Image (cartoon, rainbow, N blue to C red; front, side, top):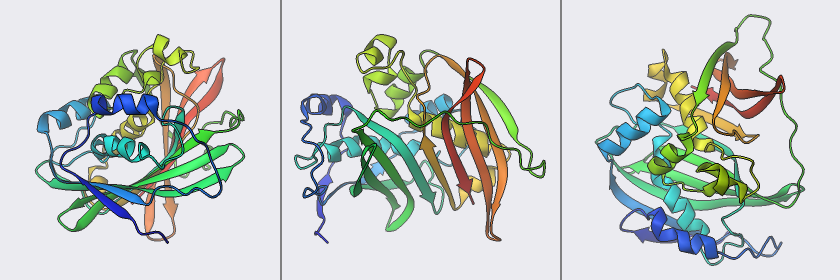
Length: 299
């Protein structure tokens, strides 16, 4: 196993300072004898901005006071992920990468007065028929304790094959009834989340900029969708998010803006130690369900 070289930054990078490098990053492509860079990027002693937290909470409808939304931490780590992918030995351009999977595991909740250390590094790279799957692992520390870890998987497509649309959650014989909510997503939501998260990918901002990358309209960020789901799951279940839990999602069909979607959840049990929810976010197209995200939260 290669030794991991650690790089320490004094501050979190800003997207504006990375955009030129992102646009110029060359795409070498997958080669079996090329590994992902054995490097990690750290920023230590990050002070949480209370105004930034308030803005994020409003955008994702987080009602809990005192503890940070688990998805908020992604807004801090995202520029570090970009910095990592700009490494000269990373063989892909950032433009065109598709975020397809995310898993977070929390051991204890973070609070707004905590000072956080963040570390980002590459995980595995796997070649499959659809393309190349790249994993980035992020860890958040308070003191010497890892309070939350996140795994992001990105796809560099080499095939046009797409997954079929999925149906809604199957009813479990009524023992754990399916619960539904209807959400209205406004046209400007992508721009609002971009200002808060620092993710200014053009596919999220405006129909015209999205069309340059093959989308018929702009689409919402996957991590906004996951954060909004976590907020919905917290209603009436606030204690879950003050201690340990895991939440894993798969991003599927693009969710165009503006839109109306259906959030479905159903209670599940996994053995004697874990319980939680399965969930999906679905829209309707020509009276057929289109699945945008599915996942499971366990505590």
